[in-house]
Length: 262
Image 1 (cartoon, rainbow, N blue to C red):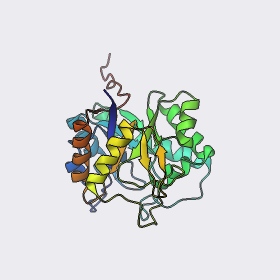
Image 2: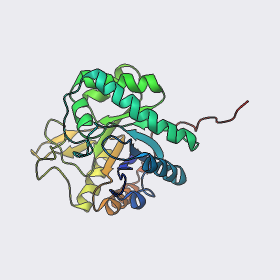
Image 3: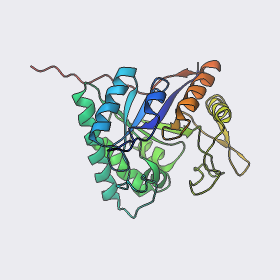
């Protein structure tokens, strides 16, 4: 039986601002990428999202991004590899503390937004992220764009790499995501997103906006939690995967930490 992980970017509310359909999507996903306070999120939201993951049996992941609340972390920044390393360590370390205090652990790291896309094509930034994750915990998995430079960097040092595909984002012919500045960047049709998800798992193929089909490896499927229809889309994708006989489960889930004291 084929299997795949289903993930969402969650915990993106902060202060008085509520963003995302976290409550609606949580029962349907197997992994959550939790904002760590730089592009979105705050300590209270991080704590509550970790608790919700543990309640629903969802794998906890850190979603570090650029320090850009105004741009939601989707604007590229002029950063050095050392900057990226430190940003990732700082943010993953914060989520690790919340997970640990609740009796859980960080299972994976997935860079957010512009950081994710830049690391998908720049080996220096990809290596910086890999170095940060390995330095924190070599058992943590790293999510990256399927077939990208970030995946290759992780695999080259033996870090667990999870090839990610997107049900709700359009692809260019080179395998990268259509920039959000374009009107065709996002898939709005829920039924189409569900069919794309099933095809990516079963056939390892997705159609680009330029016409040609692309070969992709689908270890995990992302649907963005800040979509207005996120709850509906996640449920539809999960249902379509189930109907196709595809097992939906988190990859590389490790045990909770031993919190006993001598």
